[in-house]
Length: 347
Image 1 (cartoon, one colour):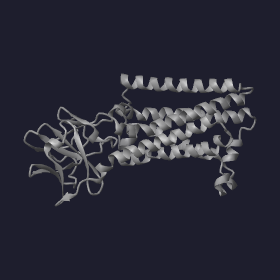
Image 2 (image 1 turned 45 degrees about the vertical axis):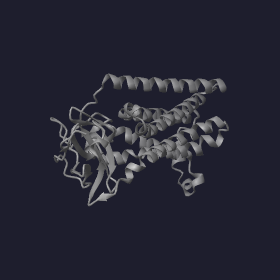
Image 3 (image 1 turned 90 degrees about the vertical axis):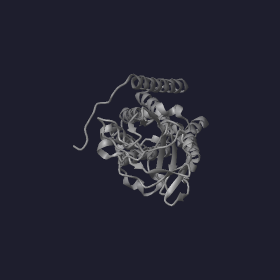
Image 4 (image 1 turned 135 degrees about the horizontal axis):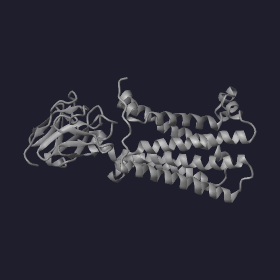
């Protein structure tokens, strides 16, 4: 195998985080079932399955919504970075809740006396001839399959085995799962449900995700635009324009983001993508001469982009120079691990 397996390092913070998540899920599903029970008490085993179907489905959708909100929230405020660092735990628990939703659906068919009807519905090929006749369950089933794939590959072993770019591209399927669940709900629950609050619940989740992503994108648009190249060099500004122990993020003409850090009188530039999970290094800080990724704490030396021993991760670095008192950057990446930092007069 091309990658080694290491057990998950359970820290106290991770345990507390997971326990809070689990408590939130139990509380949400419990309250949802209690409210539905009070509204219409169940009279059969199928009705009991129906209560869990509604409660677990709504809970899984809310969890998926929150997962997609964490990314833009962390870009808008560093307060949310701890949530970002543990987002994979959130995703795995969301998949588990979705699995209980699917199990309750199977239980409903069994309790109703037609255990194979779901299979017949999913394999009635004539229904696939038109959008209007495709069963809403198909979209939910595909969304569940995507979540299972993402949960199964959430461990760092798969990150190393697939490589960060491939792993990250695959995990972007979470957006497809979110869209499929919306269709699942629109073609299913909302066809029979007339309570406006339920419609508002699902519509509000969609609006929240869309609004946060657009807001974060609008805020970062100037960074993506970059600055005009000057003889293949990008003028950044005076050294003091780079915050001490922090970074300025600029975009190369090809759109790649580059993080320019300053540690006192030393300035270095590295790719903005962490070698671990492509996290945004430019949102991190420098501790003891090393850039610390805000997602999972991976460290890289400012002078050459190399992780300190015994770790072997390396980042692409970029050449810098001082011209007319201004820091300038060559946007062409150097081989990973190339020493490229420069010393300047105290900024």
